[in-house]
Amino acid sequence: MVVIAITGGEQKRYALYQYGRSIAVLSFTRERDETVLEIHEQGQLVRREDRRLADFHAAIDHVIEYAEARAFIATETDIERVAFLVAVPGAAFQSHQIITDAWRSQLADQQEVAPAAVSPLLAELDYVRSRLAVPMVAVSDTAFLSTIANRSFVGGGELATRFGIERYGYGGVTVEAALHGLAVLAHDLPNRTVVCSIDERAVVTAVRDGQALTSSGGFLPDVGQLAGYRGTDLDGGALAEIVRQKQWTGKAVHAYLSEPHVPLRNLALLHKWYAAHDAEAAALWPRLVLDLQMAIGAAIAALGGVDALVITGSQLESSPVLRERILAALAGFGVRIDEQKNELLIGRNGYIHERASAAGVVVLRTSVADQVYRIAERVIGKNQSAS
Image 1 (cartoon, rainbow, N blue to C red):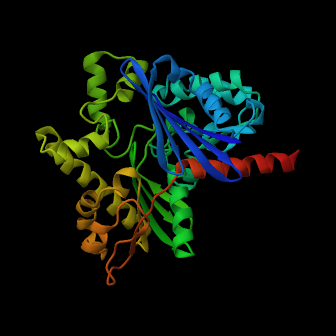
Image 2 (image 1 turned 30 degrees about the vertical axis):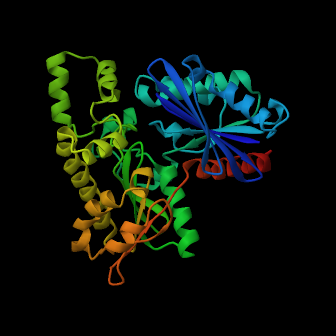
Image 3 (image 1 turned 135 degrees about the vertical axis):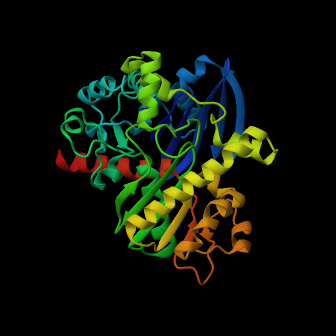
């Protein structure tokens, strides 16, 4: 059995794979003084339990216990490997690789730079390594985006080079998953593709001939469009003034940027509040839509046009209303949505554009865990061939 780990500060997911297919997903969510465990098999929720808060830290123990109870494995020695999704800034994390002690040390060195991304990942990695003596793979969330040119924030200047300050972008694995799904659906990949994803965060990526050209993501995983649980519309001058007024150190600045900014803690809640005519959500909703429209327009301009627009992520897959609001502004690019197709397409793959549209618009259900599994298997295969 192969285990895929996707960790975060308040939630972690473990996906279990046998013979190349997902057999179960265990999600652990920290809520106040307890842990909520949800177990899905074949896409269906089969169990939901309230657990102790301590169970969040020891999630892998419960994963092993469940796999043994379901006879997926006889003992934990039947686990072949564990793969972690890694969304961390830095050149050292722009490739998929086997996790070693040296790699772990490099990860620890990034804690002050990206505490929200590194701290939960490092804690989970250390605990899993203490429990399982198996090969572990780091699947980079920025590797696919390493083809983006001119990533420096300082015009390629000496400071950017010295400190490795680049627009690493994030959500690369999601883009790869979307391109995989598009290739299966369309039997080929178009030359110019824009991938718009809204899940825990919102990212828009321009892809030319299968390679990333631009991404709306930034230096940290927290930077990009307004989405998920963080506000991201803060320019350098504003930040510099806040630092001056507060007399902050660099560590305090990173802590501030990594803190949740209520009411943007959860995009799904923002959507729900908006539907309930919440005044604050109503004020934020147009900003989210405009941010995404601008990012999609910039991606299309960078590509010199668009052949396919891929809409993915849990928020877009399930919301025809959100899709319609975002895509309505793209008529100027010749992208036209069929209202009836859009309204009827919920929770499944399909096209929603008119025949006269200049580009195909496809809604795809993507699985990051599936893509992490595919990448990890390639890494293990290459490592075995090399040895």
